[in-house]
Image (tube, rainbow, N blue to C red; front, top):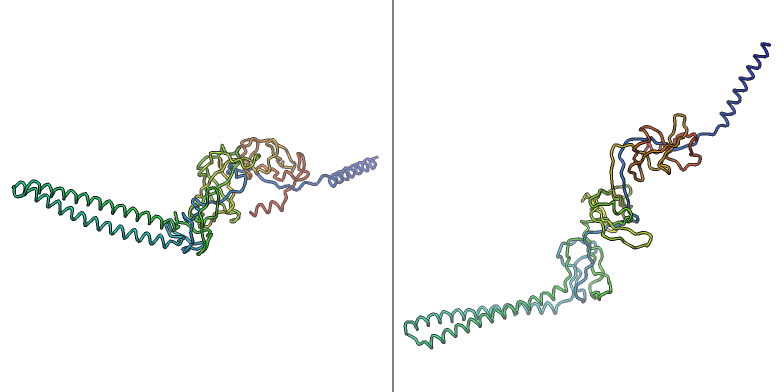
Length: 389
Protein backbone atom coordinates (compact mmCIF):
# COMPACT_ATOMS: atom_id res chain seq x y z
CA UNK A 1 0.00 0.00 0.00
CA UNK A 2 2.82 2.35 0.88
CA UNK A 3 4.53 1.58 -2.40
CA UNK A 4 1.37 2.51 -4.27
CA UNK A 5 1.10 5.82 -2.39
CA UNK A 6 4.75 6.60 -3.12
CA UNK A 7 4.26 5.84 -6.80
CA UNK A 8 1.18 8.05 -6.89
CA UNK A 9 3.10 10.86 -5.19
CA UNK A 10 6.01 10.53 -7.60
CA UNK A 11 3.69 10.51 -10.61
CA UNK A 12 1.89 13.57 -9.22
CA UNK A 13 5.16 15.45 -8.78
CA UNK A 14 6.30 14.45 -12.23
CA UNK A 15 2.97 15.50 -13.72
CA UNK A 16 3.14 18.88 -11.99
CA UNK A 17 6.69 19.40 -13.25
CA UNK A 18 5.78 18.43 -16.80
CA UNK A 19 2.76 20.76 -16.71
CA UNK A 20 4.91 23.60 -15.39
CA UNK A 21 7.54 22.92 -18.04
CA UNK A 22 4.95 22.91 -20.82
CA UNK A 23 3.42 26.15 -19.51
CA UNK A 24 6.87 27.76 -19.29
CA UNK A 25 7.79 26.71 -22.82
CA UNK A 26 4.47 27.80 -24.27
CA UNK A 27 4.16 31.10 -22.37
CA UNK A 28 4.07 34.32 -24.46
CA UNK A 29 7.58 35.65 -25.01
CA UNK A 30 8.31 39.16 -23.63
CA UNK A 31 8.06 41.95 -26.19
CA UNK A 32 11.21 43.95 -26.86
CA UNK A 33 10.43 47.57 -25.94
CA UNK A 34 12.25 50.86 -25.52
CA UNK A 35 12.08 51.79 -21.85
CA UNK A 36 12.80 55.13 -20.19
CA UNK A 37 12.65 56.39 -16.62
CA UNK A 38 10.61 59.15 -15.09
CA UNK A 39 13.24 61.75 -14.23
CA UNK A 40 13.72 65.35 -13.20
CA UNK A 41 14.81 68.00 -15.65
CA UNK A 42 13.74 71.03 -17.66
CA UNK A 43 10.63 71.13 -19.83
CA UNK A 44 9.78 73.85 -22.32
CA UNK A 45 6.60 74.75 -24.16
CA UNK A 46 7.53 75.72 -27.73
CA UNK A 47 6.03 76.50 -31.13
CA UNK A 48 7.73 76.35 -34.51
CA UNK A 49 7.21 77.88 -37.92
CA UNK A 50 4.72 76.15 -40.23
CA UNK A 51 6.89 76.55 -43.33
CA UNK A 52 10.60 77.13 -43.73
CA UNK A 53 11.66 80.65 -42.81
CA UNK A 54 14.31 82.70 -44.60
CA UNK A 55 17.43 84.56 -43.52
CA UNK A 56 17.08 88.18 -44.62
CA UNK A 57 19.31 91.24 -44.45
CA UNK A 58 18.15 94.21 -42.39
CA UNK A 59 19.06 96.42 -45.35
CA UNK A 60 18.96 95.27 -48.96
CA UNK A 61 18.40 97.52 -51.94
CA UNK A 62 18.07 97.08 -55.68
CA UNK A 63 19.84 100.15 -57.08
CA UNK A 64 19.71 101.79 -60.50
CA UNK A 65 20.74 105.23 -61.79
CA UNK A 66 18.05 107.90 -61.61
CA UNK A 67 18.13 108.43 -65.38
CA UNK A 68 18.74 106.20 -68.38
CA UNK A 69 22.01 106.22 -70.23
CA UNK A 70 25.10 104.33 -71.29
CA UNK A 71 27.31 102.82 -68.60
CA UNK A 72 30.67 104.58 -68.93
CA UNK A 73 32.36 102.84 -66.01
CA UNK A 74 31.54 100.11 -63.56
CA UNK A 75 33.45 100.92 -60.37
CA UNK A 76 32.71 97.68 -58.44
CA UNK A 77 32.58 93.93 -59.00
CA UNK A 78 30.27 91.26 -57.67
CA UNK A 79 31.23 90.38 -54.09
CA UNK A 80 32.97 93.71 -53.36
CA UNK A 81 32.38 95.36 -50.00
CA UNK A 82 31.54 99.03 -50.37
CA UNK A 83 31.17 101.91 -47.94
CA UNK A 84 28.29 104.34 -47.72
CA UNK A 85 28.32 106.95 -50.57
CA UNK A 86 30.95 104.97 -52.53
CA UNK A 87 30.63 105.36 -56.31
CA UNK A 88 29.23 102.22 -57.98
CA UNK A 89 28.34 103.16 -61.59
CA UNK A 90 29.03 106.18 -63.82
CA UNK A 91 26.90 106.87 -66.90
CA UNK A 92 28.25 108.81 -69.87
CA UNK A 93 27.86 112.45 -68.82
CA UNK A 94 30.50 114.53 -70.57
CA UNK A 95 27.87 117.01 -71.79
CA UNK A 96 26.53 117.48 -68.27
CA UNK A 97 30.04 117.74 -66.83
CA UNK A 98 30.75 120.45 -69.41
CA UNK A 99 27.59 122.33 -68.41
CA UNK A 100 28.66 122.07 -64.77
CA UNK A 101 32.09 123.48 -65.57
CA UNK A 102 30.46 126.36 -67.45
CA UNK A 103 28.12 127.02 -64.54
CA UNK A 104 31.07 127.09 -62.14
CA UNK A 105 32.87 129.67 -64.28
CA UNK A 106 29.71 131.77 -64.51
CA UNK A 107 29.44 131.61 -60.73
CA UNK A 108 33.03 132.85 -60.40
CA UNK A 109 32.37 135.65 -62.90
CA UNK A 110 29.20 136.65 -61.09
CA UNK A 111 30.99 136.78 -57.75
CA UNK A 112 33.78 138.91 -59.23
CA UNK A 113 31.28 141.28 -60.86
CA UNK A 114 29.38 141.56 -57.61
CA UNK A 115 32.60 142.26 -55.73
CA UNK A 116 33.54 145.00 -58.24
CA UNK A 117 30.10 146.62 -58.16
CA UNK A 118 29.96 146.56 -54.38
CA UNK A 119 33.41 148.16 -54.13
CA UNK A 120 32.20 151.01 -56.37
CA UNK A 121 29.04 151.28 -54.25
CA UNK A 122 31.13 151.56 -51.07
CA UNK A 123 33.27 154.28 -52.66
CA UNK A 124 30.16 156.15 -53.83
CA UNK A 125 28.74 155.96 -50.33
CA UNK A 126 31.90 157.47 -48.89
CA UNK A 127 31.83 160.28 -51.51
CA UNK A 128 28.20 161.01 -50.62
CA UNK A 129 29.12 161.21 -46.93
CA UNK A 130 31.94 163.69 -47.69
CA UNK A 131 29.62 165.77 -49.92
CA UNK A 132 27.03 165.92 -47.12
CA UNK A 133 29.71 167.23 -44.78
CA UNK A 134 30.79 169.87 -47.29
CA UNK A 135 27.18 170.96 -47.76
CA UNK A 136 26.88 171.46 -44.02
CA UNK A 137 29.97 173.65 -44.25
CA UNK A 138 28.30 175.43 -47.22
CA UNK A 139 31.19 174.59 -49.51
CA UNK A 140 28.96 172.79 -52.02
CA UNK A 141 25.39 173.26 -53.06
CA UNK A 142 22.49 171.16 -51.79
CA UNK A 143 21.91 169.93 -55.35
CA UNK A 144 25.46 168.56 -55.54
CA UNK A 145 24.97 166.75 -52.22
CA UNK A 146 21.66 165.25 -53.40
CA UNK A 147 23.28 164.09 -56.66
CA UNK A 148 26.12 162.41 -54.78
CA UNK A 149 23.65 160.63 -52.44
CA UNK A 150 21.54 159.44 -55.38
CA UNK A 151 24.65 158.10 -57.09
CA UNK A 152 25.60 156.25 -53.90
CA UNK A 153 22.12 154.75 -53.57
CA UNK A 154 22.21 153.67 -57.23
CA UNK A 155 25.58 151.99 -56.68
CA UNK A 156 24.20 150.17 -53.62
CA UNK A 157 21.27 148.92 -55.70
CA UNK A 158 23.70 147.79 -58.39
CA UNK A 159 25.68 145.94 -55.70
CA UNK A 160 22.57 144.10 -54.54
CA UNK A 161 21.65 143.26 -58.13
CA UNK A 162 25.14 141.91 -58.80
CA UNK A 163 24.94 139.72 -55.69
CA UNK A 164 21.55 138.42 -56.81
CA UNK A 165 22.98 137.55 -60.23
CA UNK A 166 25.83 135.73 -58.49
CA UNK A 167 23.26 133.80 -56.45
CA UNK A 168 21.40 132.87 -59.64
CA UNK A 169 24.66 131.62 -61.16
CA UNK A 170 25.31 129.52 -58.04
CA UNK A 171 21.80 128.08 -58.23
CA UNK A 172 22.38 127.19 -61.88
CA UNK A 173 25.62 125.56 -60.85
CA UNK A 174 23.74 123.49 -58.26
CA UNK A 175 21.26 122.39 -60.92
CA UNK A 176 24.10 121.38 -63.22
CA UNK A 177 25.77 119.50 -60.34
CA UNK A 178 22.51 117.69 -59.57
CA UNK A 179 22.21 116.67 -63.23
CA UNK A 180 25.69 115.18 -63.07
CA UNK A 181 24.87 113.40 -59.81
CA UNK A 182 21.86 111.75 -61.46
CA UNK A 183 24.32 109.93 -63.73
CA UNK A 184 26.32 108.61 -60.76
CA UNK A 185 25.05 105.66 -58.73
CA UNK A 186 26.34 105.67 -55.14
CA UNK A 187 25.90 103.22 -52.26
CA UNK A 188 23.21 104.42 -49.81
CA UNK A 189 24.76 102.28 -47.07
CA UNK A 190 27.78 100.05 -46.45
CA UNK A 191 27.30 96.52 -47.74
CA UNK A 192 28.27 93.80 -50.20
CA UNK A 193 27.54 93.84 -53.93
CA UNK A 194 25.42 90.72 -54.39
CA UNK A 195 24.51 91.07 -58.07
CA UNK A 196 25.41 93.29 -61.04
CA UNK A 197 23.10 93.55 -64.04
CA UNK A 198 24.95 95.47 -66.71
CA UNK A 199 28.34 95.97 -68.33
CA UNK A 200 30.36 98.97 -69.46
CA UNK A 201 28.94 100.21 -72.76
CA UNK A 202 25.45 98.86 -72.13
CA UNK A 203 22.42 101.09 -71.69
CA UNK A 204 20.31 101.18 -68.55
CA UNK A 205 16.74 102.43 -68.45
CA UNK A 206 14.71 103.36 -65.37
CA UNK A 207 11.68 101.17 -64.71
CA UNK A 208 8.41 102.61 -66.05
CA UNK A 209 5.65 102.94 -63.48
CA UNK A 210 4.23 99.52 -62.70
CA UNK A 211 6.89 97.63 -64.70
CA UNK A 212 9.59 95.93 -62.67
CA UNK A 213 13.07 95.62 -64.20
CA UNK A 214 16.26 94.15 -62.80
CA UNK A 215 18.27 96.60 -60.69
CA UNK A 216 21.75 97.48 -61.90
CA UNK A 217 23.22 96.71 -58.45
CA UNK A 218 21.85 94.46 -55.69
CA UNK A 219 23.41 95.74 -52.47
CA UNK A 220 23.14 93.74 -49.24
CA UNK A 221 24.20 94.73 -45.72
CA UNK A 222 25.35 91.33 -44.40
CA UNK A 223 26.36 92.76 -41.02
CA UNK A 224 22.73 92.73 -39.88
CA UNK A 225 20.63 89.62 -40.52
CA UNK A 226 17.35 88.30 -39.16
CA UNK A 227 14.96 85.38 -39.66
CA UNK A 228 11.55 85.86 -41.23
CA UNK A 229 9.29 82.87 -40.56
CA UNK A 230 5.54 82.10 -40.64
CA UNK A 231 3.77 80.61 -37.61
CA UNK A 232 0.25 79.27 -37.45
CA UNK A 233 -2.45 81.81 -36.60
CA UNK A 234 -3.49 79.58 -33.67
CA UNK A 235 -0.06 79.96 -32.04
CA UNK A 236 0.31 83.69 -32.74
CA UNK A 237 -1.51 85.00 -29.59
CA UNK A 238 0.98 83.18 -27.34
CA UNK A 239 4.06 84.66 -28.98
CA UNK A 240 5.45 87.88 -27.48
CA UNK A 241 8.24 90.21 -28.53
CA UNK A 242 11.48 89.37 -26.72
CA UNK A 243 10.75 85.64 -26.29
CA UNK A 244 13.72 83.28 -26.49
CA UNK A 245 14.16 81.42 -29.78
CA UNK A 246 16.38 78.74 -31.25
CA UNK A 247 17.21 78.93 -34.95
CA UNK A 248 18.18 75.83 -36.94
CA UNK A 249 19.77 76.10 -40.40
CA UNK A 250 20.03 73.16 -42.78
CA UNK A 251 23.44 74.42 -43.85
CA UNK A 252 24.83 74.05 -40.30
CA UNK A 253 23.44 70.66 -39.30
CA UNK A 254 22.67 70.37 -35.58
CA UNK A 255 24.12 73.79 -34.68
CA UNK A 256 21.63 75.92 -32.76
CA UNK A 257 21.71 79.72 -33.03
CA UNK A 258 20.09 81.54 -30.07
CA UNK A 259 17.89 84.54 -30.75
CA UNK A 260 14.77 86.42 -29.68
CA UNK A 261 11.54 87.58 -31.29
CA UNK A 262 11.92 91.17 -32.51
CA UNK A 263 8.68 91.68 -34.46
CA UNK A 264 5.24 90.12 -34.89
CA UNK A 265 3.28 91.12 -37.98
CA UNK A 266 0.02 92.96 -37.16
CA UNK A 267 -1.95 91.04 -39.79
CA UNK A 268 -2.66 87.51 -41.03
CA UNK A 269 -1.08 86.27 -44.24
CA UNK A 270 -3.73 84.60 -46.38
CA UNK A 271 -1.43 82.86 -48.84
CA UNK A 272 -3.46 79.67 -48.59
CA UNK A 273 -7.10 79.52 -47.53
CA UNK A 274 -6.50 76.53 -45.26
CA UNK A 275 -3.16 77.67 -43.84
CA UNK A 276 -3.22 81.23 -42.52
CA UNK A 277 -0.09 82.40 -40.79
CA UNK A 278 1.51 85.33 -39.01
CA UNK A 279 5.02 86.44 -39.94
CA UNK A 280 7.51 86.82 -37.11
CA UNK A 281 11.03 88.21 -37.22
CA UNK A 282 13.86 86.88 -35.07
CA UNK A 283 17.17 88.57 -34.24
CA UNK A 284 20.34 86.61 -33.55
CA UNK A 285 21.78 86.98 -30.04
CA UNK A 286 25.45 86.73 -31.04
CA UNK A 287 27.06 89.00 -33.60
CA UNK A 288 29.61 86.27 -34.31
CA UNK A 289 26.81 84.00 -35.56
CA UNK A 290 25.79 86.51 -38.23
CA UNK A 291 29.27 86.54 -39.76
CA UNK A 292 29.00 82.92 -40.89
CA UNK A 293 25.40 83.10 -42.19
CA UNK A 294 24.34 84.18 -45.66
CA UNK A 295 21.08 85.90 -46.64
CA UNK A 296 18.71 83.48 -48.33
CA UNK A 297 19.43 80.44 -46.13
CA UNK A 298 16.32 78.49 -45.13
CA UNK A 299 15.73 78.51 -41.37
CA UNK A 300 13.49 76.83 -38.80
CA UNK A 301 12.65 78.80 -35.67
CA UNK A 302 11.59 77.32 -32.34
CA UNK A 303 10.01 79.84 -29.95
CA UNK A 304 10.16 79.13 -26.21
CA UNK A 305 6.77 80.08 -24.75
CA UNK A 306 7.46 78.81 -21.20
CA UNK A 307 10.20 76.96 -19.32
CA UNK A 308 9.92 74.89 -16.11
CA UNK A 309 13.12 73.69 -14.48
CA UNK A 310 13.76 70.74 -12.10
CA UNK A 311 10.36 69.11 -12.68
CA UNK A 312 9.33 65.50 -13.28
CA UNK A 313 9.32 64.75 -17.00
CA UNK A 314 8.85 61.89 -19.43
CA UNK A 315 9.57 61.55 -23.15
CA UNK A 316 6.61 62.93 -25.08
CA UNK A 317 6.66 59.87 -27.36
CA UNK A 318 5.59 57.75 -24.34
CA UNK A 319 2.28 59.61 -23.83
CA UNK A 320 -0.86 57.67 -24.78
CA UNK A 321 -4.20 59.16 -25.78
CA UNK A 322 -5.98 60.44 -22.70
CA UNK A 323 -2.74 61.43 -20.89
CA UNK A 324 -1.62 57.95 -19.84
CA UNK A 325 1.54 55.83 -20.08
CA UNK A 326 2.52 52.18 -19.89
CA UNK A 327 4.39 51.64 -16.62
CA UNK A 328 6.64 48.56 -16.36
CA UNK A 329 6.02 46.79 -13.02
CA UNK A 330 8.74 44.80 -11.17
CA UNK A 331 7.65 41.61 -13.02
CA UNK A 332 8.07 43.25 -16.42
CA UNK A 333 4.34 43.57 -17.05
CA UNK A 334 2.74 46.69 -18.48
CA UNK A 335 0.25 48.71 -16.46
CA UNK A 336 -1.65 51.58 -18.06
CA UNK A 337 -1.66 54.57 -15.73
CA UNK A 338 -3.01 58.07 -16.16
CA UNK A 339 -1.12 61.21 -15.10
CA UNK A 340 -1.62 64.98 -14.98
CA UNK A 341 0.57 66.69 -17.61
CA UNK A 342 2.01 70.20 -17.49
CA UNK A 343 3.73 71.98 -20.36
CA UNK A 344 5.27 69.92 -23.15
CA UNK A 345 7.14 69.96 -26.42
CA UNK A 346 8.23 67.38 -28.98
CA UNK A 347 10.87 66.00 -26.61
CA UNK A 348 9.50 66.06 -23.05
CA UNK A 349 6.20 66.36 -21.18
CA UNK A 350 5.98 67.68 -17.63
CA UNK A 351 4.42 65.35 -15.00
CA UNK A 352 2.47 67.17 -12.31
CA UNK A 353 1.09 64.03 -10.59
CA UNK A 354 0.45 60.33 -11.20
CA UNK A 355 4.04 59.18 -11.68
CA UNK A 356 7.14 59.02 -9.50
CA UNK A 357 10.79 59.58 -10.25
CA UNK A 358 12.59 56.36 -11.18
CA UNK A 359 9.52 54.52 -12.49
CA UNK A 360 10.03 52.81 -15.83
CA UNK A 361 7.76 53.55 -18.79
CA UNK A 362 7.58 52.37 -22.40
CA UNK A 363 8.34 54.89 -25.14
CA UNK A 364 7.92 52.51 -28.11
CA UNK A 365 4.14 52.50 -27.74
CA UNK A 366 3.50 51.79 -31.43
CA UNK A 367 5.26 48.41 -31.46
CA UNK A 368 3.11 45.37 -32.11
CA UNK A 369 1.96 43.66 -28.93
CA UNK A 370 2.45 46.64 -26.61
CA UNK A 371 -0.69 46.61 -24.46
CA UNK A 372 -1.72 46.54 -20.82
CA UNK A 373 -0.69 43.24 -19.21
CA UNK A 374 1.94 42.40 -21.81
CA UNK A 375 5.38 41.32 -20.67
CA UNK A 376 8.26 43.42 -21.97
CA UNK A 377 12.01 43.29 -21.98
CA UNK A 378 14.32 46.24 -22.71
CA UNK A 379 15.42 46.65 -26.31
CA UNK A 380 19.15 46.51 -25.63
CA UNK A 381 20.18 47.77 -29.06
CA UNK A 382 18.11 50.96 -28.76
CA UNK A 383 18.97 51.46 -25.09
CA UNK A 384 22.68 51.21 -25.91
CA UNK A 385 22.33 53.71 -28.77
CA UNK A 386 20.47 56.13 -26.49
CA UNK A 387 23.12 55.77 -23.79
CA UNK A 388 25.84 56.54 -26.30
CA UNK A 389 24.34 59.89 -27.31
